[in-house]
Length: 331
Ligand code: SF4
Ligand code: SF4
Figure 1 (cartoon, rainbow, N blue to C red):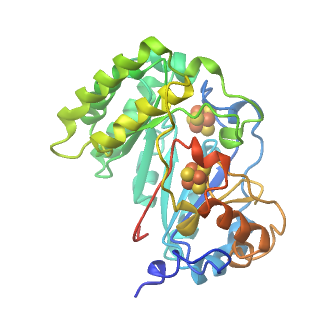
Figure 2: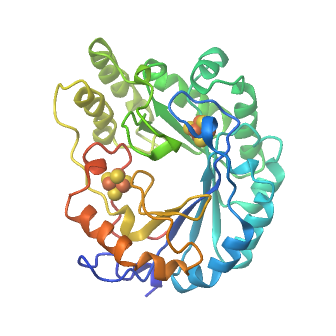
């Protein structure tokens, strides 16, 4: 049995011995200006290569298969190539999660170093892209997706659904396919007051949908059925309808869709300063950043955080836009 199949259904209080997936915030800095995120306002730190080197033995003990390089914008880290190379050398597959602005520029290196690439594309035209992302980057992102496809490393596109783009989800999916993307996934914009996306307060209220938008969104989601046959849209029709339920609940018109998530049992998030989170949305601790990751994961603080999550005691879970359940966490 591979170590990643071990013990992530452990009862509360038991140790976590395998971590198939680690997300690293390589840089808090970002060259986009998304209305749904605050990293670009306050992010300053980059993850240190030395910190990664110190954690490599722990990643081996934990059987880590994939490290997702995220942020902020990971390609702003001056040593992203070195970090990806280091991971590969240690048998870990790096996965790039990028705004896509610099993907065309570094296409050859990215195709060589990364097994998986996910790029954000929130609009089907330049003007709307600029409105949502705050920068004139539509053409650059499209070039990046195409360049990767031409190099035989098709990109997965990720679209954050919000008031400015919910009407054009099918157009975005068609564009992604035209550019050579391998798939597209849709995620509701997180409008909570939590600590994800570098936030220190409420998200901008303009990203949420209004009452009058909901029937339109429901119809638009049905239109995505045209992508069902070949699975280009990664979410099932039922999962897509959760997007409408989420925005409806934000308006007080129903319950938030039920959440089933075991992400903290097979993955963790390490921030640019070394702080460890059980997932994107729940803060963890900065304590013991020098400590090996397997010891930190099994500290009293992290163990009891996971126990609270399992017991449904974390408020972040009730409104989560990105819950994840995996029976067999292999990557
Ligand atoms: S959502 Fe991503 S690309 Fe946009 S500002 Fe935040 S970190 Fe940057
Ligand atoms: S449901 Fe969301 S907030 Fe809760 S553990 Fe899963 S990813 Fe984190």
